[in-house]
Image (cartoon, rainbow, N blue to C red):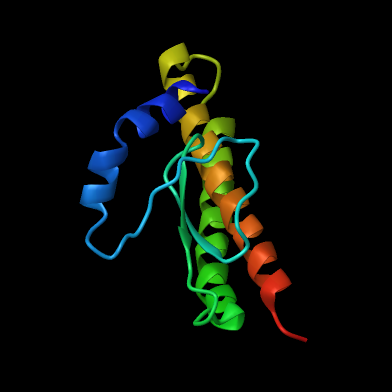
Length: 128
């Protein structure tokens, strides 16, 4: 169990209470766990994403795809911009600044990947 998973598990009751009265349960997934198909994603960082199970009886995959595509496009544009920033840093920039900018890129890539995976899950739920 990773350090982040341990923290999330230890703070389970706080997370649940902060999530509001409509949340029925909180489950901490490990990186190896499969993500349920009917879930929306909210990337937090390169290490953390929040997946919300959507009620399958009310789920409209087309609407979720329409809602997620602009988020993915925005994340992809942010990745391009951050890659430009990294290319422009030069050799004289401090290691600390380089690490910070590389961490930002990792977070953005993770966000983009999470949206891509969510789109694939929603696409798999479409009735043909």
